Length: 465
Image 1 (cartoon, rainbow, N blue to C red):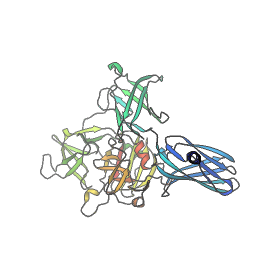
Image 2 (image 1 turned 30 degrees about the horizontal axis):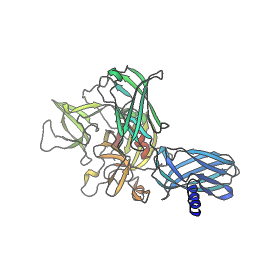
Image 3 (image 1 turned 45 degrees about the vertical axis):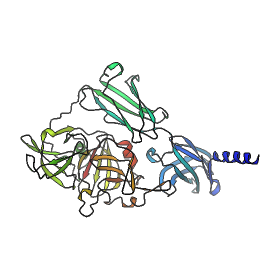
Image 4 (image 1 turned 180 degrees about the vertical axis):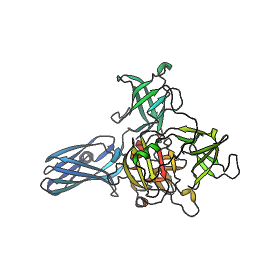
């Protein structure tokens, strides 16, 4: 009988909320365990009304979330879904909320509550369309990249017309941890083609429909973008330009090498013929070339070489080139001199953060981050490992070069960034652009924000020193 009673008491304890009480009765309570994408309550008992600041820390004292709330005296209930800044998924493990309450009479009270995050429920993390325009002539493929917090996970996509009526629906099963994509050419059930017009697309997981992504979609008969390759003029902004000038250059169509696969390298020759001694190599599909002119069937171009980061000038067959338009939602400007990354949204800069670009070691010139104008490629997963570190949220923009998070190691169930985080603001990477997982100053940008917001073919400009 005693054993049964003891077992019952232990079971009840598992469901009791985490509790901490500090000065003059300020108390913070949470459930013992929390799951991401699942609402729970943070209960705060306040001795008086005032403004509270809550900070979420892991076991290594890294801050993953800051909330400021106006509280009344007595019991307060705040809803939290177990996510960090910018709705970031958090690793399972031990956490705590530290609370500071400042009342109107100048008093300050503190409290803290420990708890565990036990993982996430299945939910749609992002749905990023390749474009907000679908062309029925098939000149550009249209797709939506999707990532879910758990696999397998079914994602329901609905397309509605201007009256709100559903004209097409599709369920996509995401079965791999790297995510998936929905490809659509505008065909409805029965083989009919959707009519040109304005629509709304919504995507959500069937298991957790509260996390829905909605975006507009314009369906047009033909693509007005000309694929004819001409002289381009400058493809790079200059220091000293205002934001309007920078944005105008960012949004210009790109002349790129028309080859499948951004990892493929193409030689640039010193003259209008194939040579055994190329002047350098360029990447396919994502790197913008400045076209200086033509000699017969050859285009005279300039860009920065992927192999050593140096600016090169040479010739490539014009038939190997095509024209692509950047996604008009965002633009990214990386300044190698200042070691910063700035995000533009619809022409307005919304945040700047410190980064680490490539640092040459000895004769390893490939580690230099090449300057130039690029377009982001399709996503290829949520993380990768290199040289003993794991890097999260990679966004490929130039062959092997990627924008990604600062490398970390595992300290138990906690991410340890101490080796690489202090290097932000100076060259330190193998050629990629490293970004902090934490917010910096008043900027809303961290690497998770970039990963969940920047769609396919976002313009990325890397300024030379």
